[in-house]
Structures are given as C-alpha cells and as structure tokens.
Image (tube, rainbow, N blue to C red):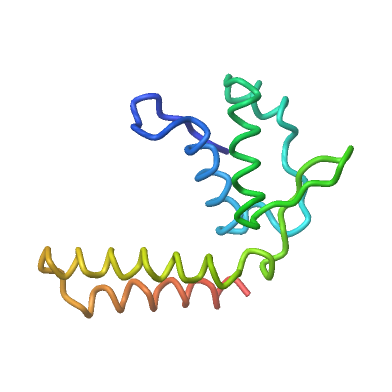
Length: 126
C-alpha cells in the first residue's frame, strides 16, 4: 500500500500523506471508503501513531479525507478536494514544472502529450 523510504529527505508523515494522496487520486481508495485506523496503519508501517495522525490531519485539511467521530477516517468526495485554493496551488506547481522543463530543453509537444495521456487514462477508466 504505502512504502516508506528512510533515505528520503521528506519526513515519514509527508511520505504517508503522499502515498495516501496517490492512492486516492488513482482511485485505489474510493469515495467514502474507510481508511485504516491510525493504530492499524502505524503498526503496519512500523511508525509512531502520531506520525500517521499528522498525515491524516493534513489530508483532512486538504479535503482528501474526512473523519467521523468514533467511526474513523474516510475518503472525501471529489467535490471537497476541488477547492479553488487547491486548484490554484496545483496550477502554480504545474507552471513551475513546465518552466523548468522548458529551461531543460524539453519540447512543448512532449508536455502536451503527457497531459493528453493523463486525460485519456481518466476517460478510459470511466
């Protein structure tokens, strides 16, 4: 499910957050699906429960998950994730990446094809 790399410069909670975010984006975890409890995930990843709790807290702040008191954490509907602020952040990241690719000499057609492929994969999965 999630692989932690202890040589990675990112903290463990950031790696857990990124791993869960990717699972949600790739629809491995679907809307309203319950996530493992903090305790279960901390045991399976052999990390402190506080580390998992920090990852869950950030995912909840970003709108990827929601919590139900006494029940656990669940994958949020896509509409909750698609906030204007988050979309602006992603466009900013995309712009920076595109500028860097341009600086490194990458062809604009290659970038366009990457984006087209992403949308094609989405359409194929529907």
